[in-house]
Length: 329
Image (cartoon, rainbow, N blue to C red; front, side, top):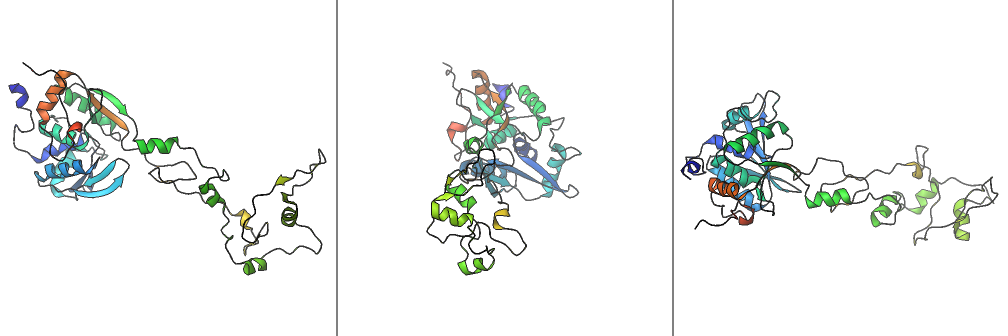
């Protein structure tokens, strides 16, 4: 027990390098310009974690500000600061990708920040420490660092969040399938235009000629050309009549094309599933999905609890490391 206390979160005064605990998870550190300034950014799941991370970083004199929202929570980021340049040089390579320093030693203070930023219980007796999926070169080094601390983990893959799973499972909406979104997509942009200007651009048919629109209006069917192979007409039911004035089949535009020739502009897919798109969403992967370290076992979980200390007031205790083993008696 005395050896474990040497590595606990309160064993020594905090120093700026302890912010490396945030970089063990999905947090990013970005250098600006020549690299004399840098910033840290990360995503937190809820307002409680955001407040706890900001309070913990305030001990190092580093303020975090709120950024944009995502499907997994809220972004926290610092300004570009000169005092973060040394940490950025240690945690980035020549290509400026995140890397673990060769002399990095994980201790209770850095581990507490890792847990504070993104750690959570998996509901099956284990505890999860997410990794940075965009920096796979850091995974083996962090596994080795956790093992040296007495927490040998297993590496697993986390699924996407519920909103991204629903969006990925939603069927593609095709125009003409009867849904309100498809009906809006099929609506002609000139349908609501005044009748008089439209008539000026309408192709005039010879007197006595019978157009397809007129035939459909009188017979209730849509006219189709005669099939030469079978010598029969294929009459299909016409679409329901609208209260608006019927418009010609093709409307000549000023450039010689018709309104029916205009391509339908696809609706851009949004990150959240509450926006219905006409095309599958194309964008970055869900931030919740990716690799993680899973710590299991009664002795390892007890050691994890001793290293990180008690949960802050703003963090849900259900997400904080707990020891489910028997109490020593």
